[in-house]
Amino acid sequence: MNAVEYDQPNSQELLEEANTAFSVAQSFQVTSAGTYEIAAGELAEVKLRVKELTERRMSITRKLDDAKSAIMDLFRPALSRLEETKVFYERGMLAYATAQEAAKRAEQARLEAIAAEEREKLAAAAKAAEKAGNVEEAEALTVTAEMIIAAPAVIEAPAAQGTFIRKTWKGRCVDKFALIQFIAADQAYVDLVSVDAVALNALAKSQKQNMKVGGCESYQESSISSRQK
Image (cartoon, rainbow, N blue to C red; front, side, top):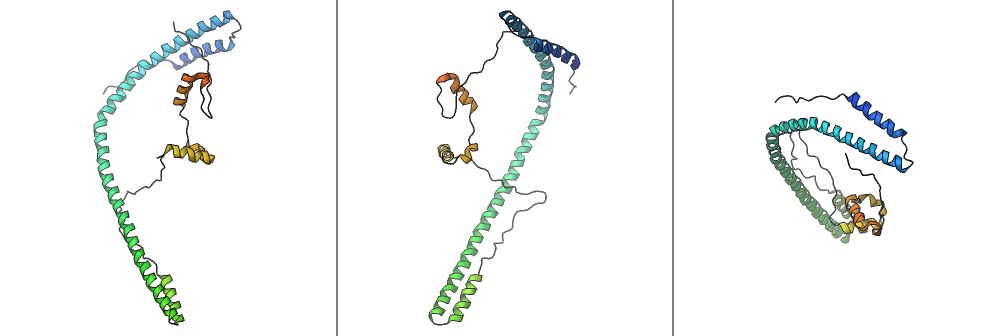
């Protein structure tokens, strides 16, 4: 692929021109209808120059964008297929790891149940011994029962050199109305809510000064609009 060729503008010359326009604007004051009209003409000239420089810049960046796009197109099919390949391996590994964790929990629950059953048996025996008047035996049985704990489940955890499973806790909203009620009751969590500025601006545009939304207000911003020459 050939290198992208373009005429590189002189940055200093462009900046000097812009600085001159900026200095003139700084010293200009709109104090009458006449100066207002002059400012409008100067503004149109500046906008025209911005348009010209933008078009000149884009004539260069389009070439660069096209070259970048062509290069990305060269690599995209192979990279896309390799990303799909990664998914197959990762999905299989995560499925196996999840199954191992489930098996470990199930085994631990089984061992806990066995330990609990042994404690219950010893507690019953201790109660029977106490009822029969064998106080020392009852105390010994009680101590033994208290010492019985479930052994840790032994399930082989998945491991491979250079890989590990990262677990991240995340939150998601499943009931927006319930969240709003929760925040209304405890404003410490108000940061969980973000304002949809696009929707709010659309509402203000349609309702103007009549917009009635709790905690919000409509307002106007003024700007100068002029047609380019």
